[in-house]
Image (cartoon, rainbow, N blue to C red):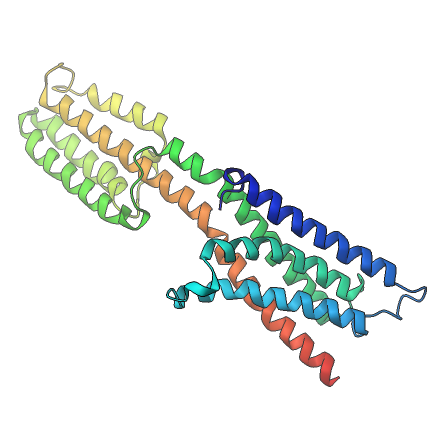
Length: 282
């Protein structure tokens, strides 16, 4: 979700969340008596803050359940739930701090706060990445392909390179032909595969140097030589493979934070329920 594309969203949701957070903190400070233990997390006020914060956490988790009920139009669109997930999730952290009064209890509560903080931090990091990486991806990879199709595109790219090498090497001198075929099998072809197995050609400057050396071989230094045309085609395929690799890396950066955020959020929810049960029974 791009915040800078929707100023109304930023002002409405962000402003409302900030106002509610300041109000919650103000009420908590106003109700805080002289004795710091009088208004603990188990007090009436502390429980209200805890229930509100926990309820918002459950609401945030319901975002993951929307994919299973796509026909339930009456619960609102996914964009609405995503906005609530972002802003109310931040508000829940403030409410939970108000619930405890900045007293972190025993080792279990301290671990719960740490997991809660990490889940919130990874969510903020993911939101920041989503503001910049899509534009960066468009600039660096103008011919973007669907991420799931990258392995198939690499297979097709390697097949085209195989056909070009098989059809163009015959016109070269025997020594040059053997040198190019061995170089193609050991360096170029592994780089074109998915996943790539040759890191040398991943560097654009090194690729230019390597192809310049190959163009200096006997039979490849003539302007209209088939080997020179072959090398130009192979260099083009390598450049395309490098762009695909760049797209893969940016895509992993764009979505990789979820592999931290989702498990942390699940652990936080389980620990929060366990904390509530332990508070009731002990």
